[in-house]
Image (cartoon, rainbow, N blue to C red; front, side):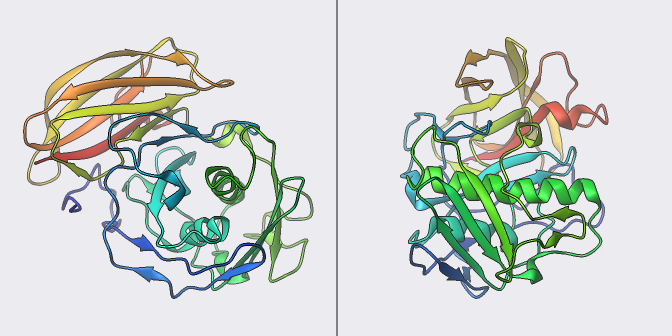
Length: 320
């Protein structure tokens, strides 16, 4: 596939984030990933897997045509530019001998597919992992992964980004049984008690904070996907209490700017696992490039309200 040469609501000074392929030559239990395993191969087009949103929830799969084997994909969490909350993408790996270390290293070294996401981490020179019978995932990460100048709020979200990424990788690969609670022990250069980004003391087990997750996600399609099938199945999740979400599709012009509306509507939210609701709708599109937006029914569209990013997500899709 190709990556679209356009931007969504590009912010001043931001660079375009291209595609990557994370290569992990690893072995399970106390393995190491160094910083020399990134490749320039293009990202897969059809990662169709849904989120884990609460501390006890497993990874949930949405069924859709042409869904790949998610065991060969790395779940990686990013922070949203607009709200600082967590979103997840799937990146392919050539090897998943240690999927936890591979995913954590990708979190520090890769670029998000979606230009609305970012990571406050720096590339780690080494990531070592192990997992205990009681589902405690131990991550030993090099201190060079911690960037300077991070404020306390972002530091807390960054630590949650790592916790979500590590536990998602463990669940997605079957290393943690579906639905089983898990936690993370984070070591830095082999030692406990490090102050992450100068703000978060790493002296105890870390667990998922449900409040760190963004309330509206589009999981399928992933950003900048290119498709030959003109019927696009849009799948996602929400932690809002609304019974329905609004959606719209806008055509994107050659300069990367969303133009006229093509179609829109309302999609019901089905009760999912725990506090997570699921939604799905399909839309038939002509060849071209489009921005698909899903947002809270009571909220505003992205770009119309500073708070809108808290309750919205969008993805670029190109139809051949």
